[in-house]
Figure 1: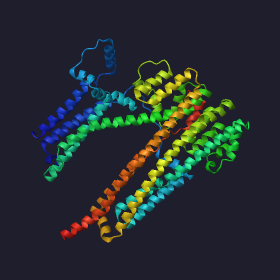
Figure 2 (figure 1 turned 180 degrees about the horizontal axis):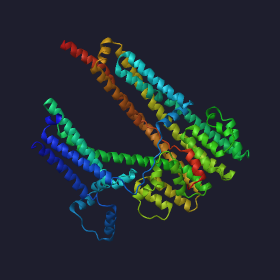
Figure 3 (figure 1 turned 90 degrees about the vertical axis):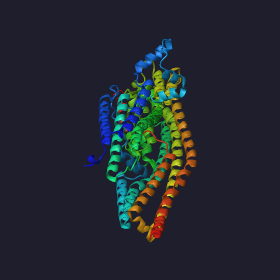
Figure 4 (figure 1 turned 135 degrees about the vertical axis):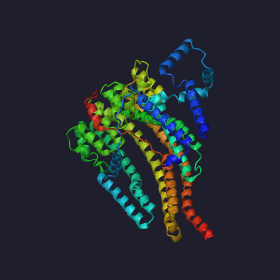
Length: 298
Length: 305
């Protein structure tokens, strides 16, 4: 029992430090409360806040960290249905289960072999690692979803140019109709199924404003570009011209991106070629080493 | 039995961790989902759809393509069994299944690009027939469908038969299994109901310039793909030649029949495939949006449905 106390104490300390850090960084505060805080700050009624809060405000890296770890935003940008509390509880459950299973396995190994095969603190380290890894995974999902949504939006533009011009459909209707017809449902989840309402809570007076707000909240530049084209169409530029030009610029950007990637690949491709030495040396070296060592042994 | 051998603190800590984990899982189940978000029915491209794409790009029936892959897998397993290195049976089977697709991917991409280029040419012909030849859309499509050229023989076949114009355009897009042709068909479906001048302008101002830009992206992707495949083939050939040379030596061969040899082989093969995967990541090609043309036909009839 006494052996376990240091581990339990370390675990409690780490979890406590992490939870209090998250609390002090204001990550569990509801979005409405944060909005009120911002309003109060704008009106000059804000309290000074805790030392940590002031420190966060003064240190840009900490402010950025707080923004990057905003689970509500990250989950919404990943088009996830989960709430931050649910995400944290699920991550905690996985981390604790991993820790328990690994610890039991390590101890079982000791019971059978009579000595620790692997240091037991590794179970704790792996369990704790689950938490940052799950956030890294969430951020990867966000990037993937942003790329997919931007790609579908860019690909709808050619049809949108025709639908708004020949059928007289509104921009938003045309984009939503096309989003329903894509095999990938990323844009449909965001626009047609109302996923954007999770982060865009304010009112908007036009499609242009709505797209600008979505682009800003979900960090998808293509929405802002469409909003700009819509604004041009509102001041007299033909919708077909405006959206066709935008579609052309999307494909020109993709072409430039593909060329940059191809140029980079020409250099980076040497890494796996050089890496091929490893399996080749293993194939030749292992039997040779075995023959030499058994010859010396015999 | 094992629980008696486990130290008490371990049982205590593990037990507490499991209990808290269960509590967290319960909280996740209760608080997990945002009630405002609606669970979407996401459509996903199924595995079979990818296989159908490759078969269509090669100009094969997809059943023949699947049969070829199955046959080559079986052949790989049989050859592997004859060598009596059991891991090799599994490895050759996997190569038979996945390798054949990789082997023909370049040819499939080149054929698809040729078809897409030919489709863009036919779009110009369509515009000219309507603008200069004063043909209606129906008759222009029929004329093009009758002389589609070798690359588009199968894809444009429905146009020659007459009947519903939208149905024929949808069928053409479905047969092409190409994102660029599907995209162009989508625009044709939406543009066709206006006056002939409107359709001509849509082809001239939207479809052809954007289609050319899309083809330029596709061509660049093909260059990257060719580069990636050339390096992969060279690496695979080196690996195969080296392995065949090694197993021809009796002492080496007997080593690879042992458990230790199998482990070394497994590690070498895993490292090789990891390097191939790394190569695929470095030389990634541009992805395109795929369109459900049947759904577009529905939406065209009931846009707000």
